[in-house]
Image (cartoon, rainbow, N blue to C red):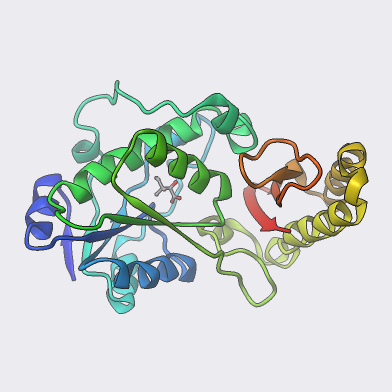
Length: 283
Ligand code: PAF
Protein backbone atom coordinates (compact mmCIF):
# COMPACT_ATOMS: atom_id res chain seq x y z
CA UNK A 1 0.00 0.00 0.00
CA UNK A 2 1.35 3.42 -0.98
CA UNK A 3 0.95 6.38 1.35
CA UNK A 4 1.14 9.77 -0.34
CA UNK A 5 0.85 13.22 1.14
CA UNK A 6 0.69 15.58 -1.83
CA UNK A 7 -1.69 15.99 -4.76
CA UNK A 8 1.23 15.59 -7.19
CA UNK A 9 2.25 12.28 -5.57
CA UNK A 10 -1.37 11.08 -5.65
CA UNK A 11 -1.53 11.79 -9.39
CA UNK A 12 1.71 9.83 -9.92
CA UNK A 13 0.45 6.90 -7.83
CA UNK A 14 -2.83 6.74 -9.77
CA UNK A 15 -1.47 7.37 -13.29
CA UNK A 16 -1.05 3.65 -14.12
CA UNK A 17 -4.73 2.97 -13.29
CA UNK A 18 -7.97 3.65 -15.17
CA UNK A 19 -10.74 3.38 -12.60
CA UNK A 20 -10.09 4.59 -9.06
CA UNK A 21 -12.56 3.84 -6.29
CA UNK A 22 -12.31 6.49 -3.57
CA UNK A 23 -13.22 6.28 0.11
CA UNK A 24 -13.06 9.77 1.66
CA UNK A 25 -12.49 9.75 5.43
CA UNK A 26 -11.26 11.98 8.21
CA UNK A 27 -9.26 9.11 9.73
CA UNK A 28 -9.55 7.60 13.21
CA UNK A 29 -10.93 4.63 11.35
CA UNK A 30 -13.27 1.92 12.60
CA UNK A 31 -14.85 -1.17 11.03
CA UNK A 32 -17.48 0.99 9.32
CA UNK A 33 -14.75 2.73 7.31
CA UNK A 34 -13.13 -0.61 6.51
CA UNK A 35 -16.48 -1.82 5.14
CA UNK A 36 -16.38 1.13 2.74
CA UNK A 37 -12.94 0.05 1.55
CA UNK A 38 -14.08 -3.55 1.08
CA UNK A 39 -17.10 -2.35 -0.89
CA UNK A 40 -14.90 -0.03 -2.98
CA UNK A 41 -12.34 -2.69 -3.94
CA UNK A 42 -14.27 -4.57 -6.65
CA UNK A 43 -15.64 -1.30 -8.09
CA UNK A 44 -12.37 -0.04 -9.53
CA UNK A 45 -8.86 -1.10 -10.45
CA UNK A 46 -7.27 0.84 -7.59
CA UNK A 47 -8.72 1.64 -4.15
CA UNK A 48 -7.83 4.99 -2.63
CA UNK A 49 -8.67 6.13 0.90
CA UNK A 50 -8.24 9.77 1.79
CA UNK A 51 -7.54 10.83 5.35
CA UNK A 52 -8.00 14.52 5.93
CA UNK A 53 -9.57 16.34 8.88
CA UNK A 54 -11.33 19.08 7.00
CA UNK A 55 -11.32 22.34 8.92
CA UNK A 56 -13.97 23.82 6.60
CA UNK A 57 -16.71 21.55 7.91
CA UNK A 58 -16.16 22.28 11.61
CA UNK A 59 -17.87 25.12 13.42
CA UNK A 60 -15.83 27.47 15.63
CA UNK A 61 -16.84 25.63 18.84
CA UNK A 62 -16.62 22.11 17.45
CA UNK A 63 -13.93 19.46 17.87
CA UNK A 64 -11.55 20.26 14.97
CA UNK A 65 -8.53 20.64 17.27
CA UNK A 66 -9.24 17.54 19.35
CA UNK A 67 -10.43 15.29 16.49
CA UNK A 68 -8.15 12.22 16.84
CA UNK A 69 -5.32 12.06 14.29
CA UNK A 70 -4.25 8.40 14.18
CA UNK A 71 -2.52 8.08 10.80
CA UNK A 72 -0.25 5.15 11.62
CA UNK A 73 -3.01 2.97 13.06
CA UNK A 74 -5.35 4.01 10.22
CA UNK A 75 -2.81 2.98 7.58
CA UNK A 76 -2.27 -0.41 9.24
CA UNK A 77 -6.02 -1.06 9.14
CA UNK A 78 -6.36 0.17 5.56
CA UNK A 79 -3.54 -2.10 4.40
CA UNK A 80 -5.30 -5.06 6.03
CA UNK A 81 -8.58 -4.15 4.34
CA UNK A 82 -6.89 -4.18 0.93
CA UNK A 83 -6.57 -0.46 0.26
CA UNK A 84 -3.96 0.34 -2.42
CA UNK A 85 -3.27 4.05 -1.90
CA UNK A 86 -3.72 6.33 1.11
CA UNK A 87 -3.92 10.03 0.39
CA UNK A 88 -3.16 11.90 3.62
CA UNK A 89 -2.52 15.51 2.62
CA UNK A 90 -1.44 18.22 4.98
CA UNK A 91 -3.71 21.20 5.38
CA UNK A 92 -1.23 23.25 3.36
CA UNK A 93 -1.48 20.82 0.49
CA UNK A 94 -5.29 20.73 0.45
CA UNK A 95 -5.68 24.44 1.14
CA UNK A 96 -2.44 26.15 0.03
CA UNK A 97 -4.31 29.44 0.21
CA UNK A 98 -7.59 30.27 1.99
CA UNK A 99 -10.31 28.34 0.16
CA UNK A 100 -12.30 31.26 -1.29
CA UNK A 101 -14.15 29.18 -3.88
CA UNK A 102 -16.69 26.95 -2.21
CA UNK A 103 -19.47 24.58 -3.23
CA UNK A 104 -22.75 25.93 -1.88
CA UNK A 105 -25.40 23.22 -1.57
CA UNK A 106 -29.08 24.22 -1.78
CA UNK A 107 -30.51 25.45 1.55
CA UNK A 108 -33.63 23.28 1.37
CA UNK A 109 -31.35 20.25 1.66
CA UNK A 110 -28.26 21.60 3.41
CA UNK A 111 -29.68 24.05 5.97
CA UNK A 112 -32.04 21.56 7.62
CA UNK A 113 -31.29 18.92 10.28
CA UNK A 114 -27.46 18.68 10.50
CA UNK A 115 -27.04 21.89 8.53
CA UNK A 116 -29.38 23.74 10.89
CA UNK A 117 -27.38 22.73 13.96
CA UNK A 118 -24.00 22.91 12.20
CA UNK A 119 -24.23 25.99 9.96
CA UNK A 120 -21.87 25.78 6.99
CA UNK A 121 -21.19 22.07 7.58
CA UNK A 122 -22.36 20.90 4.16
CA UNK A 123 -20.59 23.73 2.35
CA UNK A 124 -17.40 22.49 4.00
CA UNK A 125 -18.17 18.87 3.15
CA UNK A 126 -19.11 19.58 -0.49
CA UNK A 127 -16.06 21.78 -1.01
CA UNK A 128 -13.59 19.20 0.28
CA UNK A 129 -15.35 16.28 -1.40
CA UNK A 130 -15.33 18.12 -4.73
CA UNK A 131 -11.63 18.79 -4.26
CA UNK A 132 -10.92 15.17 -3.29
CA UNK A 133 -12.79 14.07 -6.42
CA UNK A 134 -10.56 16.34 -8.53
CA UNK A 135 -7.46 14.93 -6.84
CA UNK A 136 -8.44 11.27 -7.07
CA UNK A 137 -10.05 11.21 -10.50
CA UNK A 138 -7.74 13.53 -12.43
CA UNK A 139 -5.97 10.61 -14.13
CA UNK A 140 -9.01 8.34 -14.47
CA UNK A 141 -9.97 7.04 -17.90
CA UNK A 142 -12.66 4.57 -16.86
CA UNK A 143 -15.26 4.30 -14.13
CA UNK A 144 -14.93 6.69 -11.20
CA UNK A 145 -16.52 5.58 -7.92
CA UNK A 146 -16.74 7.08 -4.46
CA UNK A 147 -18.14 5.26 -1.43
CA UNK A 148 -19.86 6.95 1.52
CA UNK A 149 -21.60 5.59 4.62
CA UNK A 150 -25.35 5.65 5.17
CA UNK A 151 -24.73 6.60 8.80
CA UNK A 152 -24.26 10.16 7.51
CA UNK A 153 -27.62 9.99 5.76
CA UNK A 154 -27.98 13.66 4.90
CA UNK A 155 -24.34 13.89 3.83
CA UNK A 156 -24.62 11.08 1.29
CA UNK A 157 -27.81 12.69 -0.02
CA UNK A 158 -26.18 16.11 -0.39
CA UNK A 159 -23.21 14.54 -2.18
CA UNK A 160 -25.42 12.51 -4.51
CA UNK A 161 -27.35 15.68 -5.39
CA UNK A 162 -24.11 17.60 -5.96
CA UNK A 163 -22.83 14.91 -8.32
CA UNK A 164 -26.15 14.84 -10.16
CA UNK A 165 -26.65 18.61 -10.48
CA UNK A 166 -23.04 19.32 -11.45
CA UNK A 167 -23.03 16.36 -13.88
CA UNK A 168 -19.90 14.87 -12.33
CA UNK A 169 -19.06 11.54 -14.02
CA UNK A 170 -18.80 9.72 -10.69
CA UNK A 171 -20.80 6.79 -9.29
CA UNK A 172 -21.71 7.35 -5.66
CA UNK A 173 -22.13 4.12 -3.72
CA UNK A 174 -23.70 4.17 -0.26
CA UNK A 175 -22.73 1.50 2.28
CA UNK A 176 -24.97 0.34 5.14
CA UNK A 177 -24.22 1.52 8.67
CA UNK A 178 -21.94 -0.80 10.65
CA UNK A 179 -23.18 -1.29 14.23
CA UNK A 180 -21.64 -2.60 17.45
CA UNK A 181 -23.13 -5.75 19.02
CA UNK A 182 -25.61 -3.66 21.05
CA UNK A 183 -26.72 -1.74 17.93
CA UNK A 184 -24.77 1.50 18.40
CA UNK A 185 -23.75 2.93 15.02
CA UNK A 186 -19.96 2.94 14.74
CA UNK A 187 -18.54 6.46 14.72
CA UNK A 188 -15.13 7.99 15.28
CA UNK A 189 -16.76 10.16 17.94
CA UNK A 190 -17.81 7.10 20.01
CA UNK A 191 -14.23 7.21 21.29
CA UNK A 192 -15.13 10.36 23.24
CA UNK A 193 -17.71 8.45 25.35
CA UNK A 194 -16.98 7.43 28.95
CA UNK A 195 -17.80 3.84 29.92
CA UNK A 196 -21.15 4.88 31.39
CA UNK A 197 -21.96 7.02 28.34
CA UNK A 198 -21.03 4.16 26.03
CA UNK A 199 -23.57 1.94 27.80
CA UNK A 200 -26.21 4.68 27.47
CA UNK A 201 -25.39 5.56 23.85
CA UNK A 202 -27.58 2.82 22.34
CA UNK A 203 -30.63 4.75 23.59
CA UNK A 204 -30.42 7.07 20.58
CA UNK A 205 -31.00 4.28 18.08
CA UNK A 206 -33.62 2.71 20.36
CA UNK A 207 -35.47 6.04 20.43
CA UNK A 208 -35.27 6.27 16.63
CA UNK A 209 -36.58 2.73 16.30
CA UNK A 210 -39.50 3.51 18.64
CA UNK A 211 -40.27 6.72 16.74
CA UNK A 212 -40.20 4.79 13.47
CA UNK A 213 -42.64 2.23 14.88
CA UNK A 214 -44.95 5.00 16.13
CA UNK A 215 -44.79 6.73 12.73
CA UNK A 216 -45.76 3.55 10.89
CA UNK A 217 -48.53 2.86 13.39
CA UNK A 218 -49.95 6.36 12.85
CA UNK A 219 -50.49 5.37 9.18
CA UNK A 220 -52.87 7.91 7.56
CA UNK A 221 -52.77 10.09 10.69
CA UNK A 222 -48.99 10.53 10.41
CA UNK A 223 -48.97 14.16 9.30
CA UNK A 224 -51.32 15.13 12.16
CA UNK A 225 -49.61 13.06 14.86
CA UNK A 226 -45.98 13.53 13.88
CA UNK A 227 -45.17 16.70 15.88
CA UNK A 228 -46.39 15.03 19.09
CA UNK A 229 -44.55 11.78 18.34
CA UNK A 230 -41.29 13.63 17.66
CA UNK A 231 -41.68 15.76 20.79
CA UNK A 232 -42.27 12.63 22.88
CA UNK A 233 -39.15 10.96 21.47
CA UNK A 234 -37.03 14.06 22.23
CA UNK A 235 -38.46 14.33 25.75
CA UNK A 236 -37.71 10.65 26.39
CA UNK A 237 -34.03 11.13 25.59
CA UNK A 238 -33.84 14.44 27.46
CA UNK A 239 -35.25 12.71 30.55
CA UNK A 240 -32.27 10.31 30.41
CA UNK A 241 -29.82 13.22 30.44
CA UNK A 242 -29.32 13.71 26.69
CA UNK A 243 -29.54 17.03 24.88
CA UNK A 244 -31.36 16.16 21.67
CA UNK A 245 -30.97 18.42 18.62
CA UNK A 246 -33.63 16.59 16.60
CA UNK A 247 -35.42 13.27 16.36
CA UNK A 248 -37.57 13.39 13.30
CA UNK A 249 -39.34 11.42 10.60
CA UNK A 250 -38.75 12.64 7.06
CA UNK A 251 -39.42 11.41 3.60
CA UNK A 252 -36.43 9.64 2.11
CA UNK A 253 -36.58 11.41 -1.24
CA UNK A 254 -35.60 14.90 -0.01
CA UNK A 255 -35.68 14.88 3.82
CA UNK A 256 -38.73 17.15 3.89
CA UNK A 257 -41.79 16.53 6.08
CA UNK A 258 -43.54 13.36 4.93
CA UNK A 259 -46.85 13.13 3.15
CA UNK A 260 -49.05 10.01 3.19
CA UNK A 261 -47.48 7.22 1.14
CA UNK A 262 -43.91 8.55 1.28
CA UNK A 263 -41.02 6.17 2.06
CA UNK A 264 -39.70 7.28 5.45
CA UNK A 265 -36.42 7.71 7.25
CA UNK A 266 -36.06 8.49 10.95
CA UNK A 267 -33.09 10.70 11.78
CA UNK A 268 -31.66 11.89 15.06
CA UNK A 269 -28.83 13.86 16.59
CA UNK A 270 -28.27 14.30 20.30
CA UNK A 271 -25.51 15.20 22.68
CA UNK A 272 -24.52 12.83 25.48
CA UNK A 273 -22.12 14.67 27.76
CA UNK A 274 -19.65 16.32 25.38
CA UNK A 275 -20.26 13.87 22.55
CA UNK A 276 -22.70 14.57 19.73
CA UNK A 277 -24.03 11.39 18.15
CA UNK A 278 -26.14 10.94 15.01
CA UNK A 279 -28.01 7.96 13.66
CA UNK A 280 -30.81 7.11 11.24
CA UNK A 281 -33.09 4.30 10.24
CA UNK A 282 -35.15 3.74 7.10
CA UNK A 283 -38.62 2.47 8.04
O1 PAF B 1 -17.84 11.69 6.50
C1 PAF B 1 -16.70 12.17 6.65
O2 PAF B 1 -15.82 11.57 7.25
C2 PAF B 1 -16.40 13.54 6.07
O3 PAF B 1 -17.50 14.37 6.16
C3 PAF B 1 -15.86 13.49 4.63
C4 PAF B 1 -16.89 12.94 3.67
C5 PAF B 1 -14.61 12.63 4.59
C6 PAF B 1 -15.49 14.91 4.17
O4 PAF B 1 -14.52 15.48 4.98
